[in-house]
Image (cartoon, rainbow over all chains, first blue to last red; front, side, top):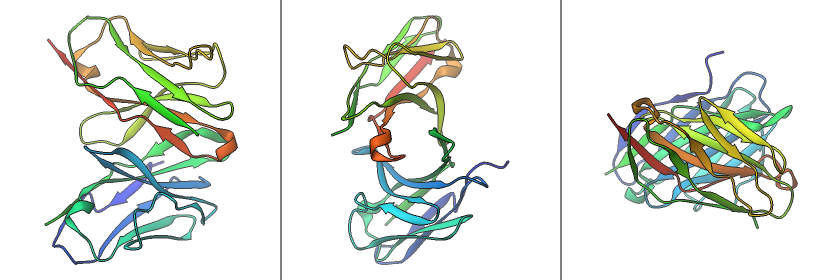
Length: 114
Length: 113
């Protein structure tokens, strides 16, 4: 298996622009997680899905952030409008209900908002 | 609630030195405990885990023992290598809160030859 795939790997945009981050989980995995990593706040859980349904989005910082999972093999995290404080590395991870103790992380998307 | 507190870094060691990274936790239920490692430019990878009290997780020479009495899960390695340079995250997962993980802030380790 190719593992969790994220795109793009790097994104540089200007304040006010819409940003869409993409994730393809490992085939057959039931859970999908979006995290944000910054030096100041460490690794934060933003939202997670179970069987494509959002379970907990309490970590989403504000209404500018939205996440969708239209099918079992694809998820997006959208920021509109983006702000400089959104600059971070965004990770997607997936896990299997039969092995909930192991999350498999993608390589991350490094977002820079100017 | 659930939380993880781990030793702040950065930690710099010479090759073959002994490593300890402290981790303590609070949990409302019966958590599983983990150490994840992040190499430069990569995502996190599971290093080891322990699912119940007194379990010892081990992998690649690293060990950690689930101590319920001290609510700790300290990471140790007897002889570190340059290739161990990475950021190490302690984490817990509590089945009462679904599959959600709670990560510590990470400890950066640099091993110098």
